[in-house]
Image 1 (cartoon, rainbow, N blue to C red):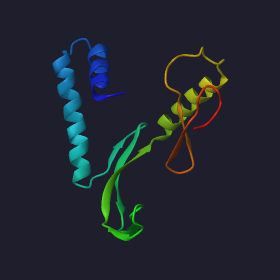
Image 2 (image 1 turned 180 degrees about the vertical axis):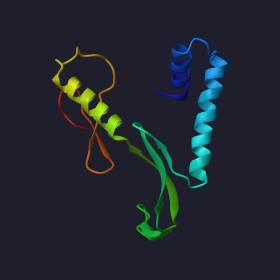
Image 3 (image 1 turned 90 degrees about the horizontal axis):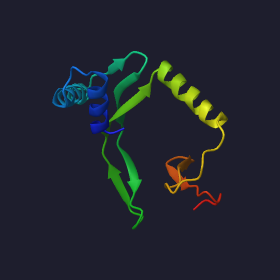
Image 4 (image 1 turned 90 degrees about the vertical axis):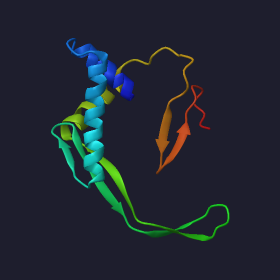
Length: 130
């Protein structure tokens, strides 16, 4: 779902809101969340999840081309932790999808199955991995 999809959904659910009002509401909420995270605050939305800032300490990395050591400075990165209700809802929907009969083949791109840490494998309908 993109920002514009969120605006459309909000405008459709609340007929008293114009498209412009829905757009302004979404922008205001996202700006408030962003500003709070920039200031280092934690945001908690019950049953949805919480946003916080994780601190990554400085470390030594390697340039993959030359192999030389590179100093990587410390960083503050946003982090989202889903709430219990959201985790359970996603898990229940996943179980429903797994129990459903397979859908018809389409010409859409194959889904990406994550394997290991940070690696993605594209699984084609033929069953081969690339």
